[in-house]
Each structure stands twice: as structure tokens, then as C-alpha cells.
Length: 291
Image (cartoon, rainbow, N blue to C red):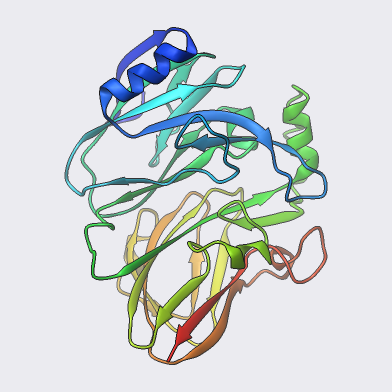
């Protein structure tokens, strides 16, 4: 069991009763769901954490107040069992069988950006990992954006979909890179990935790296200040135009829009700004500052 996570309830019921139970608890809920990632030419099968029983290709973002414990309802609407955890440095979790509902207690956490999701091979490999924002929405004076970063190897994903564990000794060569489960140019259609602010505004960007490799974000036109980091606390307070985001890291950045114009933000690794090797693509979005 994850340190600080308490397993509260597990029940096996019909789908209708599960939905009624979620409403009765009155807490945020996550639905483990399987679908197709139609944006990619390979249209791979993926697993997501949705905010409702309706399928969405983007993982839901959870919000919590800083310093307050809370409950979370998790419904496994998939046909296979999965293991869920708050990904905060401890890889243990709870197993949720198909059709089961679990209620977990999230611990009181300091303000910051955290990760949560499935840690079983299939669930994690097919992308059911998301972000927990703690205390960020309480700062209502600032616009808040979020970037779920991930790298993907479609051959590896196909193995998980076929019920075959990928070769652990094989080289990992990702061919797609995404922000909020979108690859450029679709990132520009996502209001959470595309930063659009007015001149002089301050905004925060919550970033979580769910991939299997480190990523380095380069901001054109601006320096950003590191406000929180769960893996690199010594970098808090740094102001940089290039920010390393380690594998498994949750980080919060502050950007002050002190000049008008349109500026790119991208991974500094060339392969990560391609779609299956074709440039431009991948982990690339924009900052638009209106005068």
C-alpha cells in the first residue's frame, strides 16, 4: 500500500449501482476506460482515467486543496484488473478488479503538481496516468495551464494490447511524444496546452512527466520560475528558459508574459518534436501573448 494512501472501500456490483455509489459518495471519481487513440495513424488501443463513464482520449485532471486529506472514487470499467497508486515515490498500490469500485483516501499534501494512475504493466503502458493539482486552483488570480507529458512506442503498446508483455531487454525507442495526450499540431487546439494570455499577465503551468525518459522543455521568449518540484526541490526558485523534467516528476512553473507575440515551447530533444520521425510534431506548443 502506498505510504499515506488508505484503502477505504471495495465493492463488486452492477454498473448502475457503481454509478449510484459514486454519486452517493459525493467525491471526485475516475473511471478506468479502454478505447482507441484515433489521432495516431496506427490507432493504438489505450487506457485512460476519465472523469465520467463517457470515453475521453485525455486523462482527467484532479484538483485538491493544499493541506487537506480527501477521498477519491475509482471505478474499473475495463475488462481486466488494474493496480492504482498515487505516484509520489512509492510504486505500491491497490488492485481493482473489473467492475469494482474503490474509494481511496488521498493524504494532505503541500501545494504542487503530483502524479497518479495505473502502475500495472498494461495500465501504465497504455497511458492511464494523470495529474493531481494540489492548491493550484486556490490561486485564482492566475490563469492555470497543465501539460501531461508522455512518450510512446506503438510496438510496445501493441504488445500490451495483445496480452503479451513487451521484451524488457529490448531497446526503448519511442516514436510519438505528446502533451495532454495530443501531438502537435493538435496541441494548439487544446486550451490547456496552448498558453494564451494578455500582456503583463502571470500564469502557472502544472507539468507531469509520465513517460519513460526525461524531457527538457525550452521556452522561446521567456524565462519561467520553478515554484514546486517533487523530484528536484533544489531547483525551486530557479528562473530558466530551459527546464529539465525528470521521469516521474511533477513540477509547477510560473510565467510572466512581459512581451507580446507568439512563441514556441518544445522539447529540446529533436526526436521528441516529431510524429514518427516527421517534423514538426510531438511535444510542441505555443505561448500567445496579446498586447
